[in-house]
Image (cartoon, rainbow, N blue to C red; front, side, top):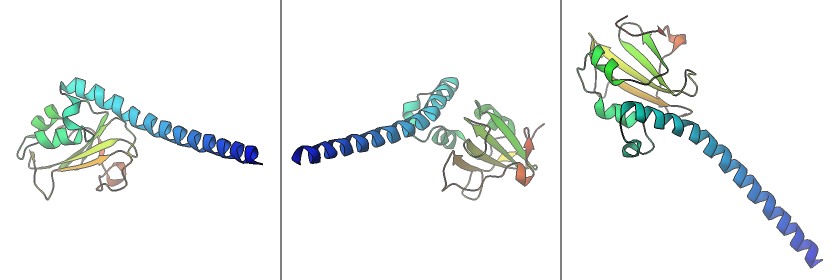
Length: 151
């Protein structure tokens, strides 16, 4: 009886451990997909990824985007993207790490008369892939089209 109980406990423990290992591996695999892309982008931008911890490239862009930058200056800064959308004559949405709106890191850059607005009322909004607590960022459904404002 004791041997049977010990065997059942051992089997249950192995099953639980296997479940946690499998779950953790799946999460690591998802995170590694972004990590590999973040490493390639950091290399392209010639920066140290470790300086920005887990919020790269968001913190990088927040640090470098300055109020009153011209559209051309913003274009020089925002490199390594997968796709760009133009929204009316006032905004661009940059897609990083994917062209899929659901999983891409998306950045909304708002301009006023050709200058970047870098204040609390507009300017920069980030959606860091699979993040349910993000701000709304427009897309094709809102009338945005492929391309840049100055095209």
